[in-house]
Length: 155
Picture 1 (cartoon, one colour):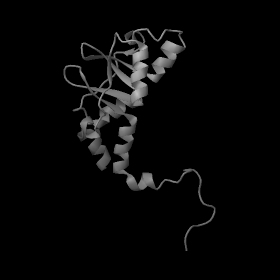
Picture 2 (cartoon, one colour; picture 1 turned 90 degrees about the vertical axis):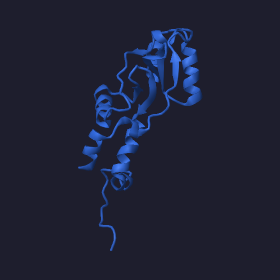
Picture 3 (cartoon, helix red, strand yellow; picture 1 turned 120 degrees about the horizontal axis):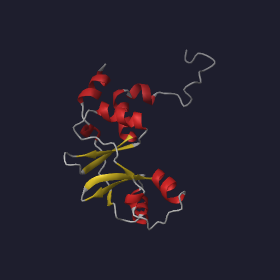
Picture 4 (tube, helix red, strand yellow; picture 1 turned 30 degrees about the horizontal axis):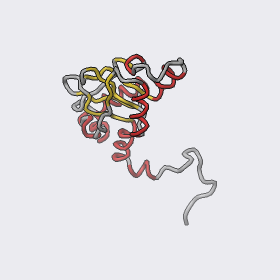
């Protein structure tokens, strides 16, 4: 099967990860929220001396800031998800999919050899990649996959 081979051979760079939006870990949560709103994203990469320190997501905002009664002046580094799972641009796509699936992640930071963020890989990019391999199957799916016509269609 061509897809199985491609998932092993083609690298994450083939998926064209989006440019990373980064913020220093000492910045306030309010700054993180502002960047997320401006750019319409649900994930920021948090850095310390330009190296990846963590990820701040909408879920972190809800659970660790709002639900916990934290101030928006709280440093984002204290409420981020530390030590995120990452991939490099050279990793096979298969590895990225496995990491996302096993961890339940919607985004994976893409880092270089020194740990600096170079991109963000999203589930959306992977879905687009899969559609490239199965366009006919995916584009012709009925709106209700379990609904079948009562009568034969056509002549």
